[in-house]
Length: 118
Image 1: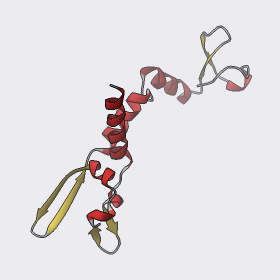
Image 2 (image 1 turned 30 degrees about the vertical axis):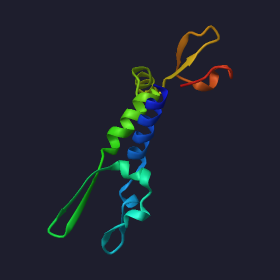
Image 3 (image 1 turned 90 degrees about the vertical axis):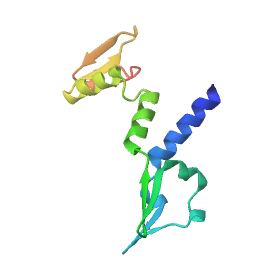
């Protein structure tokens, strides 16, 4: 199962961190890069390629969705982190005291050095 998880994250990373300039050259005109200039692992990011009347269109997979899935996997968008972000918006800081209890403070400077502030 670990290998499947790693493969999934790797593919999401390619989609999340690819951009259109991996596939085209931008200048006075937009030109497709020759396939040999595109790293094979980047091809995962392409959702479709269509050609109509001499025009080629490249559509990439949804970058924001891939970033969101990675963020969810890493716990970046958990309810806990969302709550902490909401408190910080109003000048409040969350930390754990020496007893492991969660505390809220208006001033992170007055907290002991050993405590981690979020």
